[in-house]
Image (tube, rainbow, N blue to C red; front, side):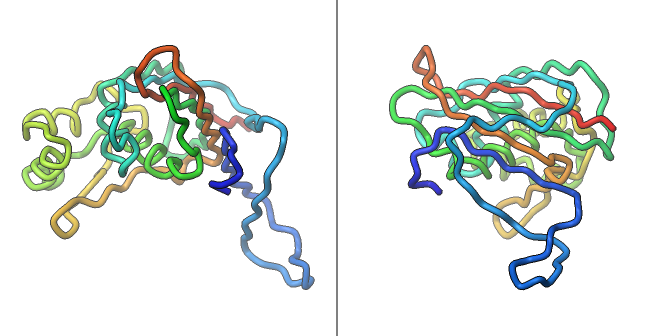
Length: 205
């Protein structure tokens, strides 16, 4: 799908029982992929937050989740409603870019992992080990990395053991399973900056 030239990608998780496969057998889950000429729309829900990242670096802006996480932690999140650990959520995000467009398929994982990680507060577990590793990867001081990990200014998804040591680096653990749908759009920016803007929605019964 990365070669089809699309500027929008939509991921959707349905929690209904799958239809039988072509063989007639039933399975507990399945995946379907398709291209469509029409613009995707979220199934529904009420908007509970608006967000905008700080500018992302011009080189390697989506090389792993760290650049997006830092840009979101330095960005803005305007929350208008409560969210619990049981809430089913959706994201509609637009990546604004100068010059050559990004392929939304290729940037999907680091973009969403970075955003969702930024909406947590790390619970402080092994902070003396993980903070220096995050700092080294991003060229930050250990103090700034600690503040970005543990500051309570963006606790949209709550307190969590967000990361732990893994080899010589860290392993991240955002609650991305709360998000049943994601739309990623890539659009030209009006300036020379790369950033992500969007909305978070909550599904209501």
